[in-house]
Image (spheres, rainbow, N blue to C red):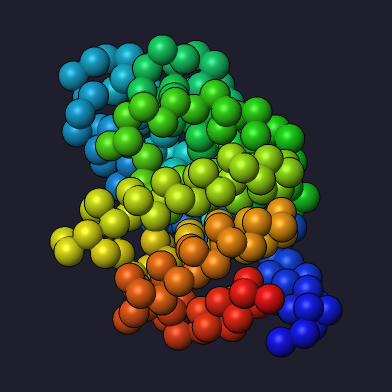
Length: 227
């Protein structure tokens, strides 16, 4: 493949990874909000403040699953205060911490995404408790970083998403999130001119995730990064 042809492929085929993350983020929201909410309730229901906040989070999660991101973020005027207020009022709780992440994802999923606000809130989210955050949400964080031109942080998040997904798989090989997250990391590395690193990732996808849909098309990425 000629260099100019490869560059054209990168610009056209992979544009959505670098500029248009909304659909990808929407697709992963439902994957983790229910699980995270259940874990939060199970582990922290004994704390009255945590219980109240987790109950409020559940309503926000419902709005997120319905893609009513503005209501989830700012409240519905009918008793649900919104993730912004939950985060503000419960800053020292796990529920408040999770509300920061949800707020960031809501800003990212608005009809006109506010990537600066999304970054502001996800930056407040502590990932120290990995039992709260899922691989899918870690991948969404990478999308937010990428949209704020924080490409190194995006690559770091995508790598972490893959590692987390694999750690949760029975055979330590996740065939959905892990190869997709690594592919996104590789595309960003290519855009930074780091073809050697991208090539290493693509080869790893081919060797490790042989039965994944991503691996079926990875040869063209290997060829492109090799030129």
